[in-house]
Image 1 (tube, helix red, strand yellow):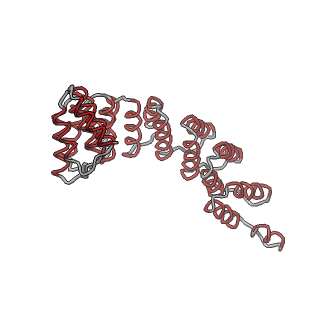
Image 2 (cartoon, helix red, strand yellow):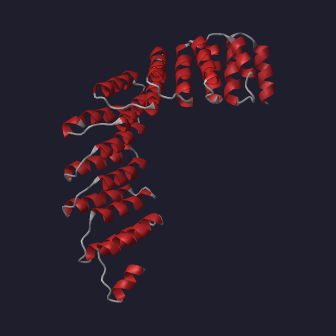
Image 3 (cartoon, rainbow, N blue to C red):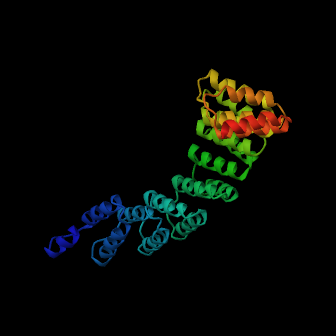
Length: 317
């Protein structure tokens, strides 16, 4: 309305006034209004810039309008406009919500438009592919970065390791960690948590415990997520003693226990027929939850203690 009033009163509108109007629409989650202003913008003699387009793309993000984001990129390419980090990440964020294929489609569109690709853009695309379960595509993008003369960072590696976790590829997750060491990329707890989780999905409990020990040596703080992932790895590996040790380590370090911590440990005991340990752990909890109770019932079942299982069912009921 303000832009329209300015024009009716013969007041000069420039790039700054149009950008301010688009930004207002972006903040108000009005992507339709942002596109309308952009269309008026394009018909006027005022020159579009990256700020204008990135604001419209961000407005589109609120409603997942990835088609409009892609079309806008084409317009930018046709007008020989620079597609910078702000624009590319905003558009990839839109596409990511609609699936990894759309994010990758936008990434390829950027390549065709000769946009400037940077580490942030790669990180966003790798993350989108990872969340879509396409860890091999994420790995290919990671390997492409040096060819584009780009350096990866801890965010890149965390996204890639998380992708490997979802794909159950723990070996590639550990390979990424080794590359980080070789390239002297600073690691953090988030990266290690993702790597330990990858080991948990891939039945590599020994590797998970080694990573936990490495965190201690590197003086990285291990939290509930770290320990739960390690316990899960021990559960899958059938090493209930290690799972109990990790539970004790959590209590010793005052790391908050939760349903996942206890449930996975009880389940580890149950898988090896250690129903007595499972019941002992269950009774140490302040409150029974369905995860822990179900794991204890399963332990009793495997140990042939159906009476105990029935009692637990009554408690749950």
